[in-house]
Image (cartoon, rainbow, N blue to C red; front, side, top):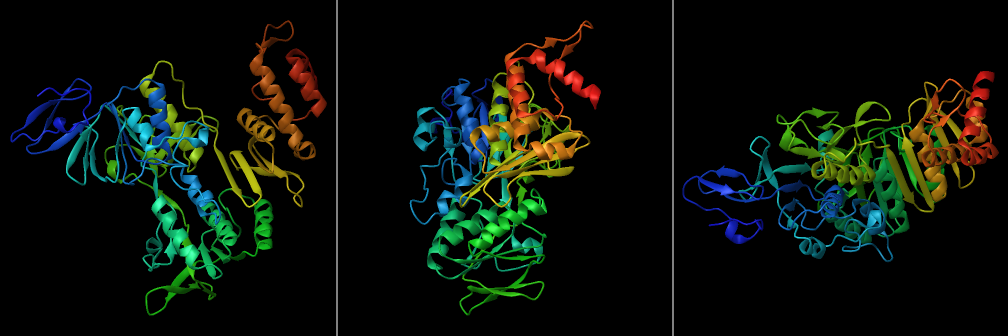
Length: 519
């Protein structure tokens, strides 16, 4: 029997009584044990989340042939934009539903519906759990007993929600206790939320899921209390001053905060439904609905002992390649070098998933043309009328600007004399781009009070300089023959100086030198 590149067809399944040699799509023979069924692909994406969809799109752009690529996912639906689950999916009016948020609408591309995958010859193996992996033999074994082999594997397994039982609290299986990680969770949450309208909801956790779900629950006319052990919301990212703004806004919407304590136990009725929660500090809160958002854990178990792990994820290099050269990891599961900060990090955000997925595909398909992955950490959220973006790192000293009693304000973080992070609430597209640019170049900062005074104007001025520098060659300033490359401009100039910079790099370089000598 001849096996063509269309390896997903039924006639390519191997059911020989003895060990057989199978010609795979990538031109090598693979021996399979007696009675084993299998399919072979050149490229396999393991996981069906955001990263999988963006990787598939990049594969098509790079010219993948029909039948060469498959996606294996435990979920029964094609990859979708997971952020929609805590936002549009929970709205009481005109809620988001599939297929409207299949990937890749987050990048303003064509939505990748099941029809799209079929038209591009990409096999979707859905509702399928992989129970073991052998990176040496380049095979995956599914729960149904099928072996799927590959030449290149992209691990996009993402993460799972941490359960209360892992912290010694039972009751997660109650009908009105909800988590939010996939579309099945979101569908269940909507059902319970609709049944509980006008009742009491308790949100366990003060991070992303907690904040976004609390907003949606209020919009759905529930009385909401948020419970978390930290002294303020979004403890991993926000400072107390920034958190205070959002907590006061949430309070104005009727949301109650119970901070510095954790869930101790549930109170159940005779039918096993939760009617209230007991907190460790002795507080009791009535509850018709409980939403738990206490963090996630990367899905690395299939590869423990086979690939190098670091910081809770699968360690990859600047090409997103693991310790096995045929295997790449992207999204929540990948611990990768962040060049801006010179260290390995694992980032839990959709933007990192999208961009790492595309870069991994480029590194596989065009290795000689693909530079190192140079990612600037980015986080954002949109709830109620609020919208914020953060870039970089929140280490060092925070410098605030703007009107914290109004609708637009922000902060910079300065560490060891350099600006390393920027935050902005209520900005325009151009202003968000400005704080991204200023964070990427990490300008030197020597006077925090002057930085505070200039505020957002500082980022705008530096951004103008960055754009101008990118559009012009380096400038020779003086007789020494040295070239000034504007990678780390100094903090202090006025907005008018930024305009001059945009018009003349040479003029800026001269001014820059004079200012430095005065300091």
